[in-house]
Amino acid sequence: MRTRLCTAHASRRPTACPAHTPLRTPTRGLRALRFATLLPLAALGAVACGSEPPVTEDPLRVTTDLGEVRGRLKGEVVVFDGIPYAAPPVGELRFRSPRPAEPWAGLRDATRPGSACPQAPHAFTGFPGSAEEDCLYLNVTMPRDARPGASRPVMVWIHGGAFVEGFGHGYDATDLATAGDVVVVTLNYRLGSLAFLSHPALHEGSEHGTSGNLAIEDQQAALRWVQRNAEAFGGDPARVTLFGESAGATSVSLQLLSPDARGLFAQAIAQSGSAMVSWPEDTLPPSAFGQQRPLSPGALEAAWQPLVSALGCDDPATVASCLRALPVSAFLEAQAAGNHGAPLLPAFESALLPRTPREAFSSGAYLQVPMISGQTRDEASWAIALLYDLAGKPITPEQYVALVEEHFKGHATEVLTHYPLTAYASPSKAWSAIQSDLVSSCHTLAVNRFLAANAPTYTYDFADPDAPPFIPIPGVPRGPAHGADLPFLFPASFDPSFTPAQEKLSEQMLRYWVTFAETGHPDAEGAPPWPRFAPAAEATLTLVPAPQGPHPEDFEQVHHCDFWRSISP
Image 1 (cartoon, rainbow, N blue to C red):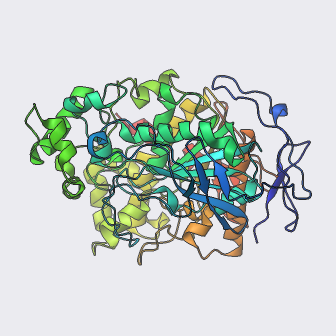
Image 2: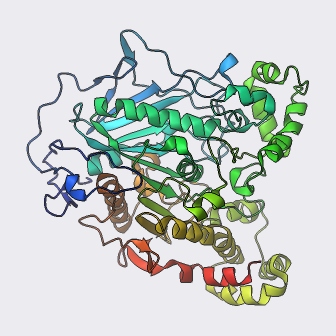
Image 3: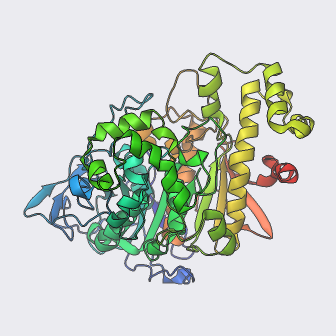
């Protein structure tokens, strides 16, 4: 059984409560945490181990700003699923900024999740896909003894999926909610061309005057819902931590770039994603965010025009009405065919996102909040396995040398010196290490340096060599591939077969994450110290199971970033 955490009065660090002892509700909240200034941690109230406080007459019923909802009891937590945070974006509301949801009379059933946003069937998970545009719902998981106004930290999760798939209710937040006595919110947001299509005829539908940013706008609408309703679920709207993985982490990064997100969260966690990270060619669908570079507004609109024409909506007088009248299947079929090359990129140089990621991060023109920023050590291995080994085309030693020579030409000898075949289990693993370091790890390091120059930043490198794949596909090797950290934070969702050492690492990671949500720093009782990543001391915490356990390492050295910087143009 996982232990729950209490916050020690003197150290402000979580300490394990006895398994039979429920937590008392915090007596004081954290005063508003402004983005430019961190308030002293003394403003945090204490949580002590003790007897359970009285709860409301019916803890399954909560009154939101739109009406009353009834959730369901699930062990130590209460779960509210399928709460609307915006009006259904259907009919005339397709390709428009999210509009307020309508209030309801009576008691709304919140025991079942809302529909996932439109997406194709998932090849490996068995999810049948969705064609339902009425999908702007969120889910709340809270400790069963939560009371209105209890001032617990709130963690808001943005799912990944390359901006083309995924849904909030796919992540069971029970372990997070109980590990640190926090409220967890997961959400859906629009995906694919229904979120990113940019065209002059659609600009009038945006509150910001620019189309193509609906995923980001949906996420902000959900965050505004959290600000209005956190207290009703026992949460503190001044202590919201925004976190996400992959496209969800990219979303976190994009929210940092948006002035409209100011005041919606106090700190953030980005797991394996950033608005500045670009994936290697052919490891993601051609239209995916990670394959693209930011485009000017005009270039972005031009890139979407072939799709608009292919959909039969290129009459300038009727583009908007034509696109709004098409069946969802038309967009999903076009997406399956590559969207005619249209990129799933947000519209930068707009009111919502005034600067490109590099411009914003390098100049400090973004929301400067405490951050955890990290990745898995071998981000590309999952994609490389799918492209080569599982496709029946494993890379041979000769092909590995040829790939390096083809891609790095005059620097091939140096690359082979840094990544010798003898250091890896297979040529595919060696090629994966190159791709992971060059296009993910070293870009992540660059972002971390920007972040650390302006606000407290803590970085990690998940490196368990025997981590189970977050999607169990026969033939995909175990190890720290993209997404391999997810089962350690959401074990109830993935039901991983952990060793005792991995179970311990999972508990430590949960402690780190919820301590950060509670205090703004991840140092947690019962887990090794997590040093701050600072310009003068760039320590990154390597997350591995015992016997080594979490420990700091030189990220730049591990991932050869100094070498890659030396040969980059």
